[in-house]
Length: 521
Image (tube, rainbow, N blue to C red; front, side):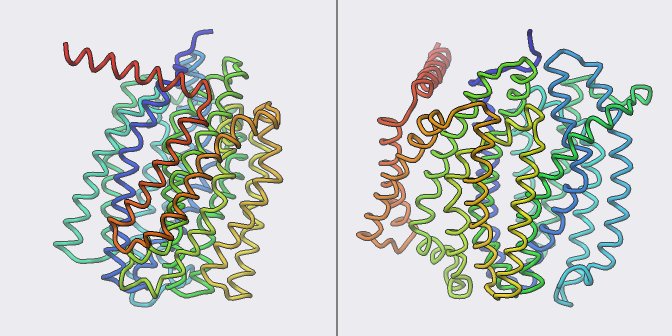
């Protein structure tokens, strides 16, 4: 069976690489922005960013039931060449999402009006909080009801074009943010204003191009189908259960710290989790282009390719994790001393939080393909139940550590660490073997052993270098990190690459060589 959705490793690599530029720019701005604001606003004002962002995380949880099935089933229908089905899905979900957007605006009105009762906010910051939350609510409502029309680039796997648009939006955000901060005032309000205007601008551009790419993304009232509502909502219901787990993890820490600890604890956790957030976002960006192809594989009944994709994704994820996490863990104190400078004594425990949040990720990400395979095959029930159950346990532990033992930000991070280790080993691991239809020997041989080996040598190198050099500035630190990364890459290429990895590298080099020759001609 032919597919309208191209299944190609080369396409995934190109699309993933194109996504990294925007992600790195976003990360660089985020790192600079935290440092800039920390030196110029007090902890009460700075804490509005993580607290309101956490509060907004509940909205996607409420609307996931309606939105998560749209992308999955449109990709499947388009892969089978059924464009009439695509129009039916859009026509069915648009009026439903429009009604949901109106409810969001009503909820937003009352949330803004009574924000001082919902959240613990310093009296002098209530007006700022109301302005920020109003902007966030409006932006979310607009993006919600227009979501079905923005999916064309995702379905067609035009991630390079999508990321060019996102990159332009990010440049617009940065320019606007600099103007507002440097020429108007230093206020956290401008962070939300700049982000909202740039995101909506990019979103509308994507919609226009998306409709040109897939003309069947249209709304016709006569194509409304109640049975599609039930089907998509059923899929979305289980996705929402899983997102509940993710939302608990994202929002519980800042909100519990806001209520039971201090603004300093909120800020410390926010700083300590910065690396964790950026790494998770980067991995999501890198692997996002793979999801449409996995759905197409399932639609064409290619189980062998799904299993191979899971094994490769796990191996590559461990390599990426250890390459980034290793130096962050070994040089944690030097990193935060240089980053925070005179504020280091106030927020020094951020280094401990970073260690707790990052140290279990290499093992966790060895199973990174699990959620993608579950989504592609629409077998998400067990995965989502495990996810939400683990995060409810996380929530209970966080309440206990913070509310009763008064451990502050470190207690929040400790709860995440303990639950992360437990759910990975005793729940996600056996589910992965079953869902991907692989044996434990394959997991050890093709994921775990080759995945961990470069990290063992790289970490050993970083530990030795740190004990000898004791870096005291950014240049020393960069040199130490680079030395360990060199050892890491050498071990990876000499001993750990699988035959299929080597073949892919040869293919990529061959394509690059051919294109260079064309340019010369």
